[in-house]
Length: 364
Image 1 (spheres, one colour):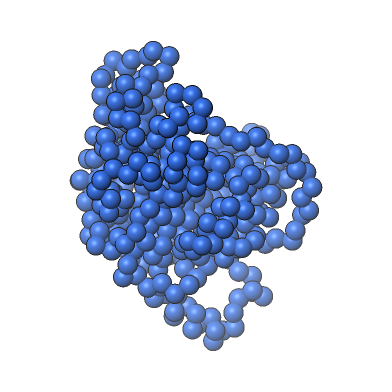
Image 2: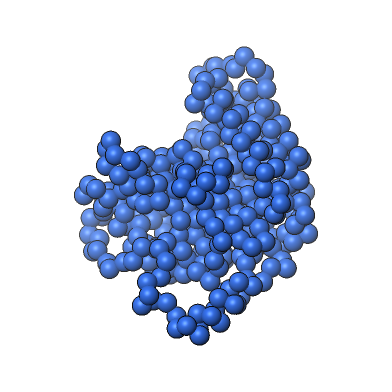
């Protein structure tokens, strides 16, 4: 997708607060008393998340510097149990030439320490301090995902690859998988298809789609909620201008295979594979399940630059996909941005999308 950013105001006046790691277990001094802990554990074991939010932030640092007040109010009002973020775009810890730690922010230079401080400071305030956070970061300021889960909900396991290997992370930090007693939650930033037939483009996306399908079959023993920037618009109804996107080209290039022609995310090849994943994996597109008709006002999650040929051109590429066996539990699935001027996008070119399920205990 085309990316555009607001100018970042200079601000070097941050004071370093005393913060504990946001995703670390509580220290002994922070744990409740034994009886209280036992009661709390008995209660929390019966509760699972039922309200979810996904958002491609298009650089978490930029959003914190420019749009955090508005986004914080939105989160506070919505009060989701889980927040899935894509395109964190913060580099992983580790100096040049050394192994990286995708679960921690880089902080071995003065600039990276300041950037880390900005993020940590923002997340230490309400409403985000009520969440534990897991990170999966790229080596550079590229891609990356985050998963915020309210502290009253305890996942049984959190992993960072489609292979579900505990210590392994997907390249560029594209996956966080949280497993609860009755379901799995998969947060993904799916690779963009690109415009040309090359290893970093079409082939990379084909391999990804194949692995996602394998993952869905392999984990079919438990319901799945799959969310994030899936970088595909499944049907004509999922874009504002189907003819424009179907005929889109980059510098006049035409792929040899007609199924690869058009806007990345709207090529016939990608759409067909996505449809196959849904059908064969017994999955439901939650938004389309509730909204059968085209919604030109709020039915799209990505919007082009307000200046240029993409003005007013929009796509729905951010999803909640839910196991078919849970489709009757889908109460709400909404796209929260609207308008050519990107109201409700909070500085990103993507807007948040929310999902609410019924029949799940919710007491936070």
